[in-house]
Amino acid sequence: MDSAVTVLGGSGSSSVEAPAMVKVNGMNYVFGSHLTGWSLNDNIYATATSLGGPWSPLRNFAAPGTHTYGGQTANVITVQGSSGTSYVYAGDRWNTADLGSSKLIWLPMTIKGTTVNVGQYPAWSLDAAAGTWTAGSGLPTAGIHTLTNPNSSHPLQRHPRPARVPPRARGAGRSPTTSPGEPPGAPAGRADGNKSANDLGW
Image 1 (cartoon, rainbow, N blue to C red):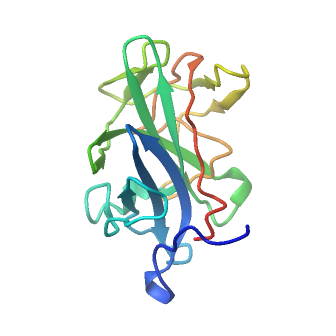
Image 2 (cartoon, rainbow, N blue to C red; image 1 turned 90 degrees about the vertical axis):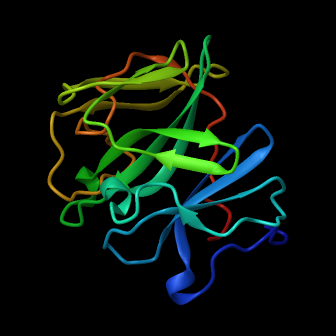
Image 3 (cartoon, rainbow, N blue to C red; image 1 turned 135 degrees about the vertical axis):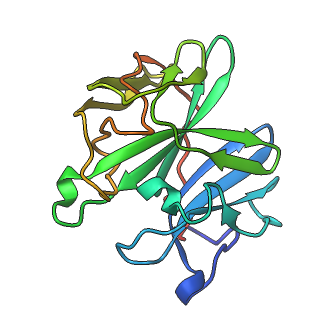
């Protein structure tokens, strides 16, 4: 890195980690987590039309007090299909006793203007070919979840999905597991525009 484009957050309790980024209709969205060690917190986001700013104040994108449904921002996945484009929040659920077995929670993300919202659903389905999602009911079943980059045919995420997540585990983005609020084994499909802010130096 030759120089910083902009600096978000601050030091100490104002610091931010675990960044992810996506650009939608000319608006940049950057997501991150407060620095609270292994303790859960309400993750935050900011928006700007230019990477150099000005950036909006940092604010929650999930309901306050939910601790982002037990997850920490890992990625935002853009799923573009024949009928629309959906955005999927991928959050790490860290298992500090065994980091390698940590799980990932996936939830649909609504992006409109400068507002981002992630709600929690007992179950939901992603139609990756259409680029749409629907809320479901009950608990999802075990299965395989695959999203493929249409430009390279390489999978963006593909993992076996056991039926449950240990309580309060904040799963790592390496092993998404079916649990309340996660997609129940959506079919292989198309995803693009997947962007990361891991090199922004938060």
